[in-house]
Image (cartoon, rainbow, N blue to C red; front, side, top):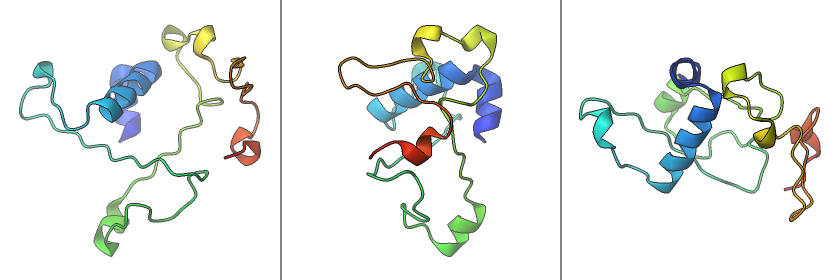
Length: 111
């Protein structure tokens, strides 16, 4: 499903949209109309995203669940969506000392 949405909006638009969804959950902006509904449930845990059933889904829902892993440092981005200042594979935070994310960063990043 994320691929379908990404084709419609673009990578950075999706990330921005997800940030908005996290801030304003369950609000439908007027331009979305009443017949359009999309629900994204996220849970931020102190792990690397490798727990199997964090939402405690029933066996029926587990069968139809789709897990989409997003690699923010290595996934391709359309030129029209690319901003070097927002590239996690190049950005280093002076404040936290984190970054840039390179290679198999998920395996070496501390939680």
